Image 1: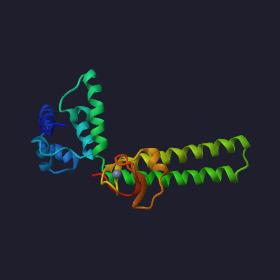
Image 2: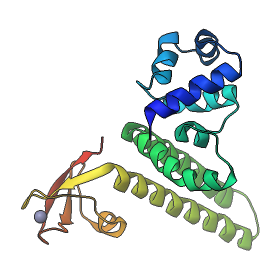
Image 3: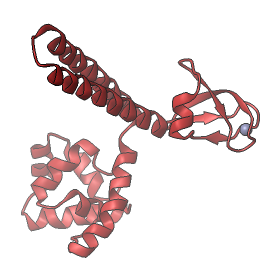
Image 4: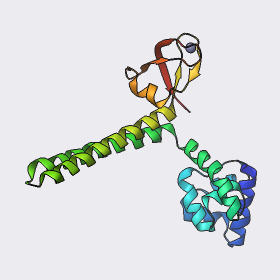
Length: 200
Ligand SMILES: [Zn+2]
């Protein structure tokens, strides 16, 4: 991720489009200073500003993050790299909010489906279909929440101090409290109650 290159690219396309820094700032509801910071390579657009900026400049996010126009072959090559960067930039707090919201939505939809299956006189097979859907939804959601947790939490081994990220299965089966989780350290192999911290 080359900030200076990205800045020069933003500037170049902005000039191509005959836009001033002020006009870009107004259209994106941000300060002129922010636009200037991007162009001098002293900052990158927030994830939330990227899409409107790209729309305005008529480029893709992939091109923005690469700091150049891309042909089809380059586009695919760069996509993965840039995607990884974007996921990384989504803050852990946001990830936690996403998983909480998804959890609430799932509970609500499962309640709705259960009521549907229980209250109305419908054919047995339809009840099974509804129950099946409810189960799939719950399993999918648990997976999402686990993936979010595994991607944001880092554990520190009590015995040797090694920092590690548990595997999905280990994470799922480990006894835990809000703050700690009983995990096997991949470094020293000892099991202990490990504290975790959210990855910054
Ligand atoms: Zn250890």
